[in-house]
Image (spheres, helix red, strand yellow):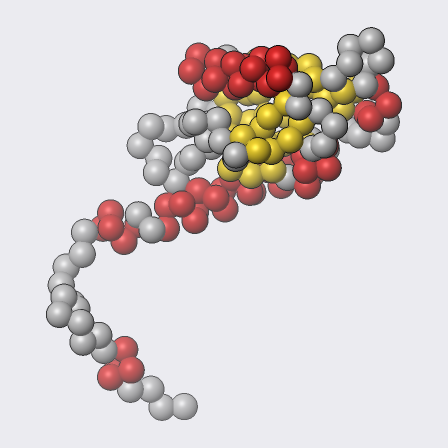
Length: 158
């Protein structure tokens, strides 16, 4: 097969003009950050953890399959955020996520009925990232752990 140099020619007015390195990287940053986040979530799933990866605003970057399977009775994904169905617990969950992101200290929230021991425990752990790493959007990991009957056959983290 014969190739022609003209097939690769760009006739736009600025073709061939020097381009700043950051402009070439900028469009790739979100793609690479998303791929990195999915890799982390998939790795956590491989060790039996249901994980939601959160950005600096507490919005979900990625949920692995185990985490998706736990959404429903007590926890939903709404507006890009993890939300508790119970209004008071939703405020508690939002405060825990905000606190973890702000103070870089892990926090825990229990969702569901404490008397029946059914429900969902959520541990939110900060991720230390280099400030200048444009490919790192991940700022916290929320590990979802079913309690009671829902926990049967589910491997969580201690």
